[in-house]
Amino acid sequence: MSGVTDEDARARAGSPARALLCVGEEETEYLRAGCGAVLVLLTGEYDGPTALELIALLSAAFVVIAPRVPRGIAISDWLVNLIDGLGFARVSIVAETPFVAEVLRFAADDEARVHRVAVLAARSETAEMSRFLE
Image (tube, rainbow, N blue to C red; front, side):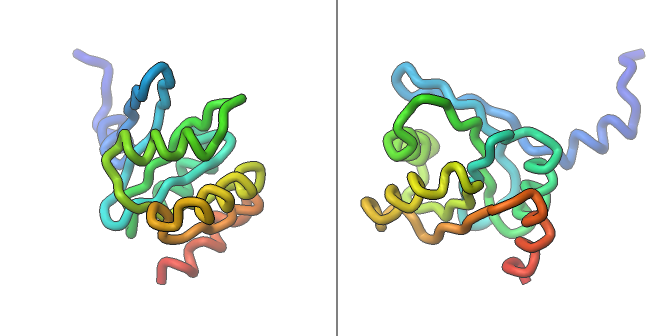
């Protein structure tokens, strides 16, 4: 007997896929879920309960890429490598407050890569985001 219950299997079936992208010397772990237009979700805790809830909500309408954001690097350079490494030409970005300034600079410098930017200002935004999907 494997010890995996039917309930465990059902819970994992709805979970995002976990993957690793290697670009040069930089490795980025990320979660991927859904289908549709591509949305990159930048949060401080990419695989925490709040992020997983948001991924579940957004993945109903988007391919959600939720990467672990590396510390101490230029976000714009890293975003170029992430987007190119995953093979996407254009993405929308939802970012928590700590990442917003750099994401807006990235979007302004490379408008062809970024369709939209949305700010995720607080954890309570999970419910608020649902109105944009209707």
